[in-house]
Image 1 (cartoon, rainbow, N blue to C red):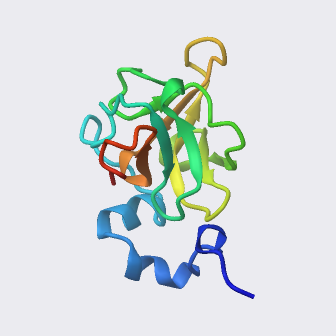
Image 2 (cartoon, rainbow, N blue to C red; image 1 turned 45 degrees about the vertical axis):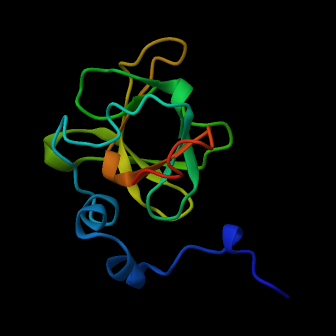
Length: 144
């Protein structure tokens, strides 16, 4: 039976360091945070899908992105069918909700209850944990 690369399981955890750039590894596998206002996708306004930088799972859509002023890409809702894992995070003396990719367990960012209508949610996501796939074929295929 032929393997479908689009639906192949993500690489095993021990392989992430070998296949990810060091900064992406630090954010997604070690739970790091990029400096505010430094991410390449903060000002990405084209129509498209924001996918997991590790496994390519679709996570967010551009129509749910907004400028929260926080310095990180922010979304008020995940993409339809997105598989996110929400976990309590008690690091740094705070109680927050961590957002992870449910497909590969990559750390993405955090979820806050200070977003705009209709959800009131703010998914505050590191640019380095995402790749962008534009809807329009005449734009570059992917931004990482």
